[in-house]
Image (tube, rainbow, N blue to C red; front, side, top):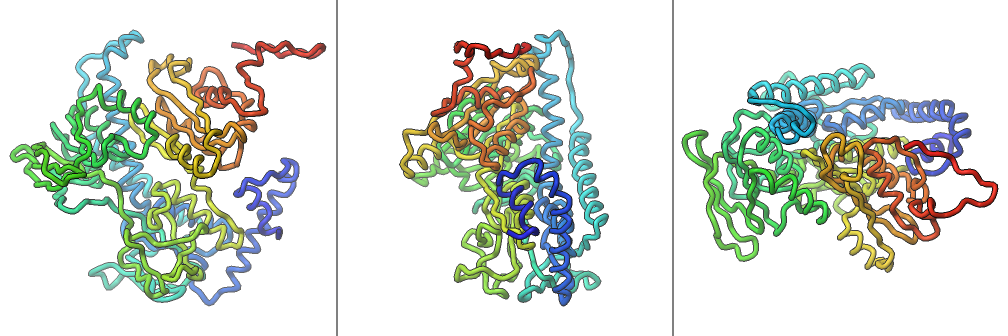
Length: 552
């Protein structure tokens, strides 16, 4: 392994290097890596840039930062807004709405407040300032991202880009002759993201029938809103709308709410997030026809069709309809044919595990990469960023493969849901196929057993871990409860580093903290050959061995 590769290999692939060695080599080795990568880039001076990134969302931005750190000359081409969907029409403004509406929900929960000696009367909210909070936050972060790129010398080219051949991109804006041009680069990375997916038969008017892009503007709060889809997006908006006083009806194509989540976690989450609130639902049906209405004048009409029989089974009249049926890749107009590639039937750009684009024959297209929602591997903003960093590592000849099983996901409801790895159902199915079906075990704990959660009056929730009791491998971790989105990272990092339960079971967590929820999961796991901590207090110490006192 060359000096150029050694440290990054150790860091990214989870190889164990002694701390003293890392400390001694880190600065010198990293500096040499950057110089070597920069020298290689300068050797290809026939191009305008070493790396050109098409799209500047979270994935493109992360890739640009890492590429500059690696000594590359970088430009990004952005046809819409710096920050992409996440910053402008997704993760960021939705969290602002959830934060504000969550405060309203908390203040209206008089029973909860009275239990802690707090009395609050006549809680009200103003819609426009809540909407402004979301919009202002998105604008602020967008500006921060742009300045962060400019500060390190990344050129920002404005326009919609398309490939015109190997190493060449043309960009322009419709109707603008003063914007655009053609640039070349040693490597090109596609990071164009995604757009809301709207099923056939649903016309979007942006007022009464809308997607998350429109809902984030919070132009009005309908008395009754139907939400098509009960995944991440639908759940989060149901949290916002019910907190602000709306009634919600879920329309879900499959037979259960929250498809894709671990079933046990989904059942508990439904009891807390859906059943007690002003929410009803129709499962196993499609919204086969939606007719927009007029706010305050004419209702939205929704025709429901049985998913299996395709027969019309019901009709709804609501004030508004949010279409939350997932997202579709934004890959039109890239002109992949110019390099011998094409999107698949769903519109995704095919890539290998190193994010290299594949041509129509399944072979690597030289110097062309695709990351994020556009490749369909894992449609999450932080996954896009991780893929971008991984792609840059490969561009700099530091081979890297991202372990997607270690990428966490979260739903920011109140309380939150998070997970990493496989669901229990998927883990058992995979284990049966691989021949270790009898080795899958489950560890569980409740937030009601956590002192910090009880102090907050937030005991609703649970965590579970799916693991192999013969090897201690962590297959999946799922959390529903207070700050679940923050708690999941100890588990995701363990999976990323290849740590077994034996490696982390004896770690210490501060008391009282929510992190002890994970501590309980690890300590309750029964792995062959590893002592059970719960039994150690019953085992007498060997003669001459002193036990340390532990403060409660």
